[in-house]
Image 1: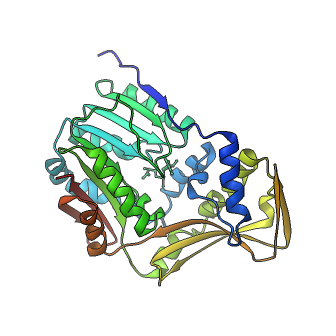
Image 2: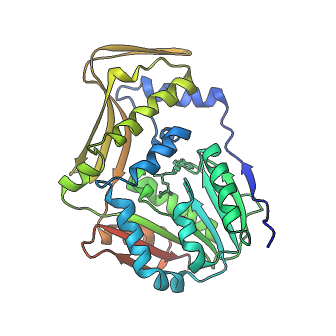
Length: 320
Ligand SMILES: C[S@@+](CC[C@H](N)C(=O)[O-])C[C@H]1O[C@@H](n2cnc3c(N)ncnc32)[C@H](O)[C@@H]1O
């Protein structure tokens, strides 16, 4: 069989000026922050793939075990031959494991880490020459405009890895509403979500003994150095993360080890010792709260699968 060439459409064209304005505003605000989407330069994407291999990071392993155990039921719920739209596809490995069961007619991986995705989809097309693949370099955090090349037939949005936890519950609801609108009547959503559990396990998952998550977090500063022309010295910062029980979320920060002044094109800021830049929230849900969120967004026919300990859940929800 001849290999179809995969195509790649780059829709993410934030101007340098826009990017710098967004990042600068985050760093200059009283409680400094940077969006977790800036973790993912080429090295950040590789570090995330390494995190998924860590013993403490139960999320990927547990989610994979649910897909392995229930793939037949999941395929039956989802149906075959549709358009599989993989949101934040990364190395595309999770979707690729579903191909034999779901037999998508078109695979549409979407990611903001454009070069990493371009390489991944090129490799995948070699392995699955019969599936039409259209990579999209796109930031889906604020809007979701899919090009006409994305087929309307049985659109299945695939959002694994509990990436939904990066949104506040209100923003997750708005995001689900956008997905619901983009699904079409015969479409749906297949999503993985991390469930609330003892904080000791949550804390370990985001602060592993090897320090890979710390490197992943600190690498954001190297990415900012390139994007902003900033002079962050990563030796002056440390990784901090903990489960905030009241908010039901992991919070991740970069904390100044001592007083430091950081300069970038068009701005500068002094950070006191112990002052932090907030880099990520990862919300954890109860089964009921998560299902309710899907229903509030207009989804129905919800099926769910979880592991024996109820640590993680995979849900399929229909547009109608
Ligand atoms: C936590 S990783 C998940 C990767 C893979 N789906 C998995 O579950 O292993 C999040 C992925 O989403 C991408 N991403 C994060 N924010 C994004 C955004 N706003 N728009 C598009 N992609 C985004 C990142 O580049 C990264 O590949």
